Length: 234
Image (tube, rainbow, N blue to C red):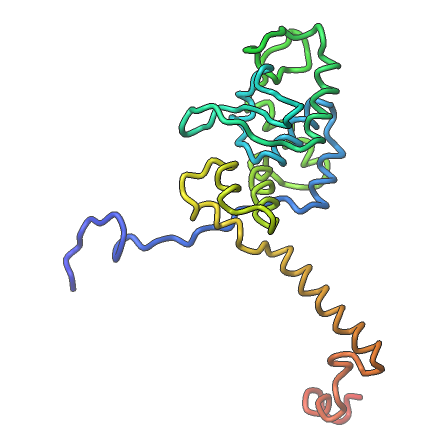
């Protein structure tokens, strides 16, 4: 037997399999979004699911870091602490404008002032814990256990599945140092695989019916039932 060696990896420290990130199915996301109670919360979730920003990164945005005309929002990256502009959806900026109109005169104005504030007086800059609890409550009302961080995974999967979007672009938007980290989002999601396979099977059945053929595996043959249950079972 070989003597024990304190190794970082290898014989005594086998690599653990990488877990597939958990994203939110579209129908569940729609249910959660419908239960968000305010324009602010809808704006936050719309930005999270379209930019792929981490929760703390989006909360670092300032009023001067938003450019609706170019559909960009500037955030401070978690690792590098650098300022980076991220593209966001049109819906995100619509909800943001509604939120800003609602809070006009209630929050301090200025390019360096935070973009996100509490809704109740006295207003304070929004914290990660408050956003986490907000999304947790909305998900619970929709019967889901989805987490705030799952919005980043959802955005990543949506971008990675778009054939018109190079994976290196997705890597840049997500702020990954290595392309291999981004490639995990090319792994098929279980729910999507099941849905596509069921659609494939239904298509086979429809095609067979259109040709006047019996559907695949229309039933067991009599001799098969005799083997399974005996001749007197029918």
